[in-house]
Image (cartoon, rainbow, N blue to C red; front, side, top):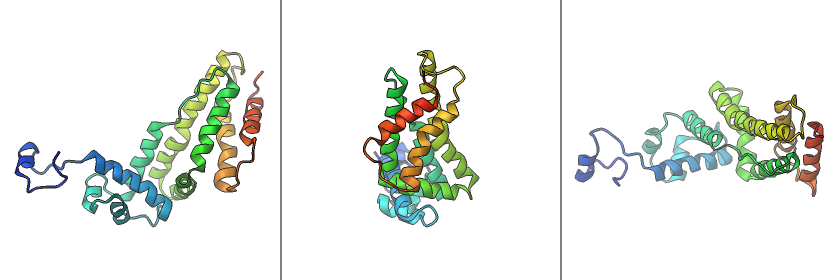
Length: 207
C-alpha cells in the first residue's frame, strides 16, 4: 500500500488520482487511540492536535486530513463508542441480566481512562452543544436501548408489569455506579454489585 502523502512514488501516483490522499487505516486507528490517551492525560481544553499527532507517531497533516479540528476528532471517537454500544445480556432472568449489566458498567467505569475522560467531557459539553449531543448518544441513548431490551424481555417473562418505566430502569442501573466510581471515587465493597442488583430488581417491581 502506498505511504500516506508520498508524492515521489511513481507507481503510487499511477494508482491514485491526482490530489487524493491515501488514508491508511492503521494511522487512523493510531490517532483514535492517541485521542483517548491525550484526553486522559491533558483533558479536552488542553489537548492539542500537535500532542495527538506526536502520541500517534504521525504528522499533524495526517490528523488534519481526517478531521478539521480537535472537536470533530473527539466527536468522531465518541460517536464510534456509541456505535459499539453496550452488549445486551440475555441470561433468561431479570436478575441475571441486571447483574451482568452492572458488572459490565462497573468494569468500564473503573478503567483509568474512563474515570478521567468522562467527567472532563461532561464538563466541556456544557460549553459545546455538538459535544453534548454526541455524549448523549454515547452515554445515554445507546444504553437506554439496552435497558429497554432487558425490560421488554422481563415483561414477556412476566417478571415486570407492562407499564414499567424504562428510563427509570436506566437511571437505577447507571446512576449509583456513576456516583460511586466517578463522583465520590469510592471502591465498591464486597457484595456491592449483588446488593445493588437486588435493589434495582425490587425497585422496578419484579414479581
